Image (cartoon, rainbow, N blue to C red; front, side, top):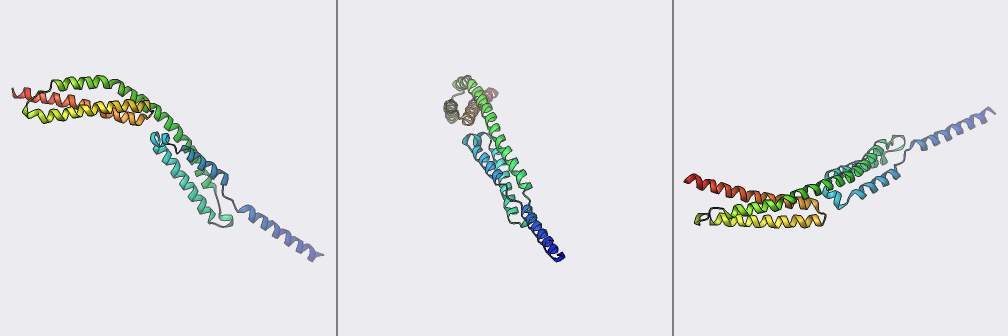
Length: 204
């Protein structure tokens, strides 16, 4: 009887040990992985790549770290597996993907406002540049310079038109870039004409 009880006790202990070993083998957080990958994929849009590229890259990099950590733990055995760090990285990547979407929206609104404000002042700036060019010193020695300034003014007009078109197409970063180019060209014409006049005046 004692031997029978002893055998039963050993079998029970073995069964408990086997059960614990299965419990101790942690499994990969598949649901978290899929949810995070979906969140990052949802953030990989043209708008977010344009208006919040750094935020998106942060989310992508964190997801890569998380999946790398999952693979590391998958390669381990039994009790040594621990997906806690992977789960934390997955949550972080998901939060960063959400932040990338919010950042893109905010940056797009700002780009639109900045572009429209800059475009609003271009007409006057271009008019001033044309007036300045009309009064630029003329002569044999200034022919090449005048042609260069005329080309700059033409480029400014083209950039201003491109900026307006880009705004109508809701391409605000492109619009902002074109508007800045137009302003810089117009400012350059005015500055160069002013410098040329001062140079001639100094010779008198």
